[in-house]
Image (cartoon, rainbow, N blue to C red; front, side):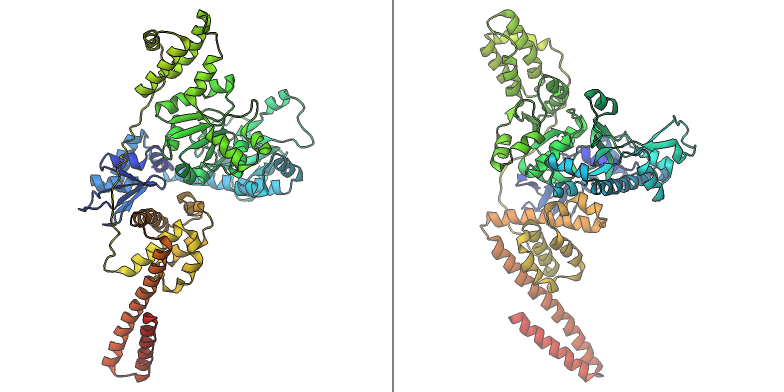
Length: 613
């Protein structure tokens, strides 16, 4: 199977939508609940997380990702479940040879090494660092997003990569180099002298996929003291240059920064979309965490499908002058077709978000900017009213010819009726005439996604602890810790009482500094096993589930954590006492070592006292 096809299927399909075709889901905070389809129960304990794209039943223990669910519900083997979901996602499965998969892995390694090279070059280039600081970027932001610099040299990166044991033909395939001559035969061995660096004298922005793998770069021209003198010069070399399409990079599928911001997109219920890396970085730095950037103003259907997974509101931070609106029009039509709510950020004329934030740093001003975003149809209607005079026929034609196609693209009939009525009243044109006219307009076909989401409220009971309480109590404490890191110091005092088999996950959670540290993409990047990643996902889901129950029964989280820690200590001591009891019985039966028996009895008595403390 192709290197990234499983990821592509996951990216195109929302686990909530897939599971809702089999199970009636009900909204429960950030997640969804249902009666488990895999065992009989009266109280819902089956939870689906749209953020982590997993499910888990806290009654029977079933859990996993979208593939696991289909395998279990349809009683299918893995490959058949993949085929079924691929058909749903419209992904044509391609079964690749091990050689192709190996080649793709090699390209990721090359990009990773190139990123390190560019970072080193920026660190030693005072002028480039000063430029970024003048643009408003702090060192922490530059470091967090691993910005770099490509020196003004024809082969500096190539030499670096070759010294790191990569072959010239591999560097060429990565898109980081350009060939002097056309190479049509992939079997021909490429020589170092045949290629040169694609990126030269540029600020470098690494591009990551959803799993935080570096798959390409964007380079912004930076000439330093040897600045390009005219706009024509800049147009000749290109102000921005992107990696070309490769085996691992597809421009239509990547949104800059999404690997970092996806946890916030769901929390804040809207996504701010800006054009370019600088707008993104200044926004992120200013506290706008629900933000992504495009390369240009065009959003693809694939990207919109990904964004819809997190929330239903898009706020466009593009320059929406006449040219900008035209460039964004198809993307807006696609978004409206998917029944996404679209708004427009109202910036001063001629300013992009980066410039605005450089001048306006107060959090209240920035928040107000987002709150005042104009719904797209209001934006269109306001613009329509400036295009012509409603007191003459030509003016009315200009207004109607601009606005009616926008109304046509609305997939919701009530929305269309509302805006037709508003246009009718403003332009003083009979609504039937407008309805007749709109039927004659050829609108682009729209894709409507049925969100089949139930909003019913229901009550729930606390999770019943099973016979083996010890590991369950430990997991419950770690789950609370994921949601409330302020418990770290308290939990560390009880470290010795945690089961050994879960201390790996406990250490991971204790060391996490931000929610992003425990995201799936970050856990994969640092090379953790699937078993550990799955356990963190399960515990994060358990935390949401448990907190909802605590809230429903008006139980204070601090009191519950204290209670659970005491319970953990008791269960740990009971386990030790049970083991000691078995050892004592063996010694009593053997009657060989009275001193060892005395030591065991002494340990038993000490632990018994500790249990009563």
